[in-house]
Length: 166
Length: 289
Image (cartoon, rainbow over all chains, first blue to last red; front, side):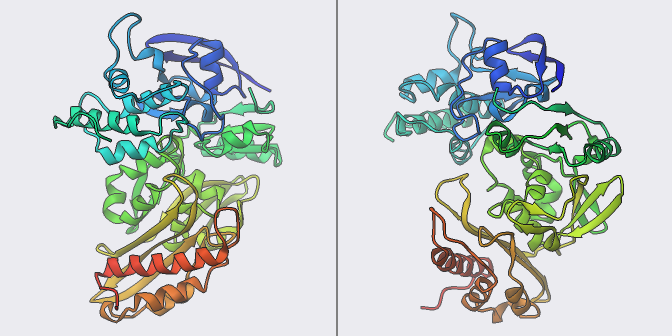
């Protein structure tokens, strides 16, 4: 059993920590770094709730060891908006389109959307929907999430979208 | 934390990684992208003494043209292979197959070599390697060997890899440009394991099939090469090809199983129809009424 010193950036802050090799990135983020917005649903890569952005890409933090994140730049849902500040456009869109109910899956979904949309990115609806297939939501029936996807794609490509029908 | 305790090393060269594997005498497990290994560790189905992370070995990454063919470094992430210009140009069918591997998120971490070395019978990449006549380059402290993909897989999750061996490259021979690409897959949801699928390519020379490569996935204990159909196609002019007859001969080389998702009969029926349709579309012929 080996212990390792890792240095990484989480939501813009530098962290140094000693971790046991077997600690997953999701457990490290929640229990050591305190980012409990990282929700752990299944712990084997099926549900998508623990999705965070690692070096610009949406990944499942339960399928990475903390030691593998040495040197990485990580964003969790806590890093999307300033405390008390305006919501991130993805969060705003999810709220407007009723893309959540209980909220357990939401941080993961929001992080995938945030990784794939925004400045300079022009995702197709098909690409975003395909990425969403990696997330389980047991409440919404996905229609609100689909509407949010459509709206985000339209915002990035400069097209207008009629406000709502699924 | 869920996995049983283990040591972790991240060597920076192939030689170093091979030395660790040799010294561990079978107690080491290689960590590539971890998208299959991490669940196995969390469920304690895998309990290695030492995990050898290949992420720091630069020479295991990247796609290069060699001798007319293509060499893929095993630590090339699936997402990077999908965006690779050389692959898109020379071997588009592999890109098509890659898009069906797991989910967006797992493709962001998962590697080409990880999927090839794991040998999941329902996976796209092992079947693509068999269909496209790839060679798997394997290294250990004992030396290097080249294993044809068709001889690499011996059962579900079982390959000819010895515990001290490492996959260091996957070489695809040249498939002439403008080759016909074939890919079809049926899964219950996007990202689910395939119920049945086929990947392949036809190299065309003056209107005739010069070379055919076809392999099924989820249709037996390993990727199943459709040898009979390959032979049937070889030398045929494109106009002569009977997609239904080819699909029926291809399905003869499978050994599908019954499970909770589908029966063997269902896989055979759907597989035949899917492949016939894919071949028809690829050759742009219309179905006989």
